[in-house]
Image (cartoon, rainbow, N blue to C red; front, top):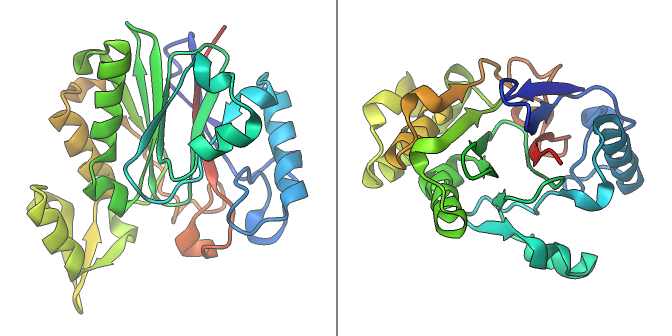
Length: 259
């Protein structure tokens, strides 16, 4: 059910879900926790219950935003927990990254080829989860998340550990020439990130683009880990929208500071 991350740090629970272990069917087979990609909602709810029970998480402490490929970051604090469920959902609308220092609160993002980035400040005890497709990467959302950790919880980028979780690989992520120009205009090292494949198509290295941003934010290269998995290639283990279509399940990459 889970691909574990940050295993060397017992105080934090972190992983990406695998496809197996749930009740959804078709392209959502089977452990899909995302409720806005067309799956049967009662199946999603049952999957969340299975997921929480298997991992010792309270369902009312499980938070995932409704992502829109933007660059907004939301902080989950005690005041957030006091809000009604309706108001909490409103706060999580259009959010693509979450930050918290609350123990027992599981925060995560949903992906199916895009880059999930998990951040852990082991000094200040802060976690963050980031969803970065090409739009979020272009908008430098991971830098926004680290800045939020620094402003709200006095984190230092040098103390932040980063894990790029399973996502699509360089070889399997084909994009149009227009992205080359967009990323060049934002100061990305395009000669390292794009490879011309012919017929106006390029391969784009989303993992390396976000590793570049992490280093720009001050995260030490030695503190950045990158998953070797490719969701497109390993679609039987992880969901891939490019393999299965947009109306398919999503990986849930999450973090929780243990009680």
